[in-house]
View 1 (tube, rainbow, N blue to C red):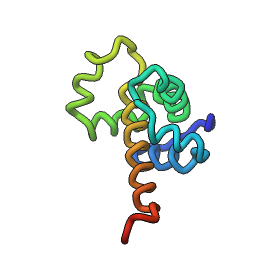
View 2: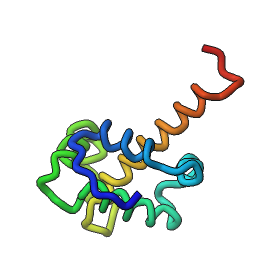
View 3: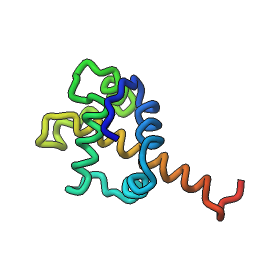
Length: 111
């Protein structure tokens, strides 16, 4: 999962992250408390993979546009000046996608 990616949209980033996770990592993300100490390795991976330290990355601008209320207060919530907010959004949306996929593929679910 340590490959750099040049995706340009949040949807592409989320899909790429989820589809490239091994089953064990997918299960780990599904239950991960995103703002916990255990999530820092995930943050680091997402920041590096999607090159979120590059301020000109169009992915950052899209995340800010799609989540304007959260983006407006992102600097107040963190002592870290890096792209923690953006990584958290990608992780949160990936986690939602995993839960949606799991619900669709559950044998107890009717179509």
